[in-house]
Length: 495
Image (cartoon, rainbow, N blue to C red; front, side, top):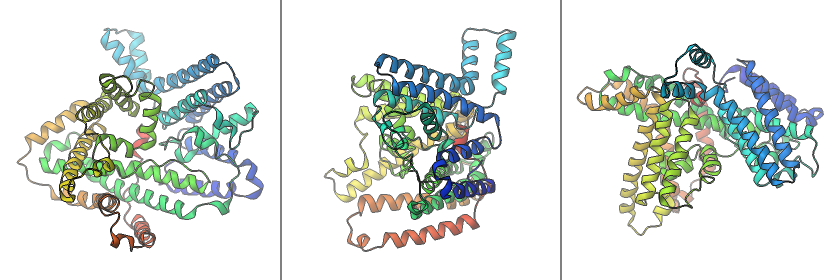
């Protein structure tokens, strides 16, 4: 069920009303769980069976971890749970990739392997599987490392399996974040499982998140998609270099608006139900290093990769060479997490190598660290501008591996940039792409200027940002109602 569909609006309104009825207060978790199953299985009812399997697996494993005293047995249950999660993920998402790799590498071809490949090719990838798999693995690891959080919120010192199953079901199925995140931490979410009251809803925060989220998705992303479509194969081959570059920048803006839009809608919906989800995007295109970009882009995912992959591999504690290898390995796995095709792996390697080179050259500082230097204002501004251009260009180049899922087509796109350099501009594509990208560019520029360069300026201090934000929200709401593009699924649904 799409957040942007009329069906979802009706679904959420009905769920919201029932959820806050006084005589249903004790059943609020059950109402959310039931609603989440309806939301998830709206177009494919078989998905609910897979979701129920994931819940059962993780509820049993986590309950054993909580109640066992022997650390070795805790780790055994954690391992079994993680393996079970990865087997489900691997079967549905990576089965065809693994099978093709094995059969090609070892030259295996017979009736059985051909039948397996055909079966796996016809098998749909369950929507949101990657997200709730990561969510579940985080739960098991956190419980094994430190289980004190289960004594807070809805938990007492002795819990029944029924109680734990209910809480775990709510944690995994919570429909605002079920499909595309943000990826919550169990320690944060479980502590929030308690009765919710209508009077406690932070309405301003809810409306702000929903208005900005829907605007980013329905006005920016859904309109840009009609123009960035032309850098799909083979259409980009007939376009000039500058046109393709503008469309690639437009796709960078589109993918941000789509991802961040979903996250903000999810955060707003969760807040309306009394739950706090983590921030997921923080103006990533103002970044002056790749390291900073990954602290601002899809924060819950990059934090997950850091805490559950990078640190366990040794992080930066085992020497420089090992650090570079860890960065490349983690980003490659992060790339493959997005999809079971080699172009995603290449995208991960691209970013991993970028992070490694950046660390090697010592230019992985954040904006604040760079700001602390003693350069003059204009010297620093010029240096920042160069760094920003390089990082934005690097990230945008990487997005072509998302847009063109065929690796050969992605390489051909860059060849086309050198081949079509003398072709004329396609203004019918460039002008609307620029216009729909401008709001994101302006908002990032405003953030960069006000919070980095002019944060202490007396003129800024005299401006009422609250009243200014109210005006902006009103304009964004009007534009969402009047200028929404054709409805499309969120890009992250494919992951």
